Length: 134
Image 1 (spheres, rainbow, N blue to C red):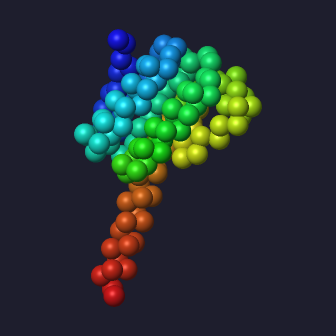
Image 2: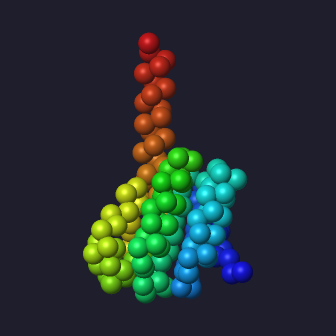
């Protein structure tokens, strides 16, 4: 069975979907990605769908599930490279993709992940300061 490669880049995982995702492959990606977030302690997941021309409701739900599961494991999810037709389809299907950030390309997606993690770390430091002063 095909596998979609998951690359670790610093504190992030990068997934580039280069093939049409059929249901079994999408479910496999979901399971593999969540396991990798847990195994590596990744703080962010970047999913590049620039080669994907069609997204159905199942694939939209899989992306949303990945984001929700990753968030539970303390990782943010950014989807990049979404073609306009895919965005239109997702909206028409009523799939808002809660918890999924988007960016135009990989470079902007990485910048977004870095800023999200930096904000979380600063908020954590503020919590520590409050605890110390009590």
